Image (tube, rainbow, N blue to C red):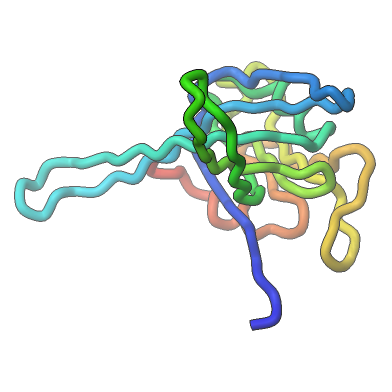
Length: 170
């Protein structure tokens, strides 16, 4: 195989309000945790079981970061597309650690707000960097689509809106 793909798609709820940090370069990073929950019924006992995974999300994209900072809060339901990135750091005890984050890069990534207007206090919408042909994305302001009584389409086609036309069972 000549190429590879590093793409993550998640639908979940924010575990904490977005936190904004400024890097020494002056760039801003918006970070938060996202919970995804898998539910099933145990075959033996018939009980409902849940398993929640927590994902650290970092947004280096200035436009998407502003949207997350302004419209997302703890508990907000979002759809996002990003990449996995592993970083190494030293904890306060001096031990070497590794952490894997979901990262929305400067010119790539998508973020869709899935909450209703009333739950968020604003409008529904989808935000993504404009796409140019080929590998990367363009710069500029985020594209916005949507409104109405259901979640908006993700930029680049109707693939998400078709799946989300009905009520989501989770």
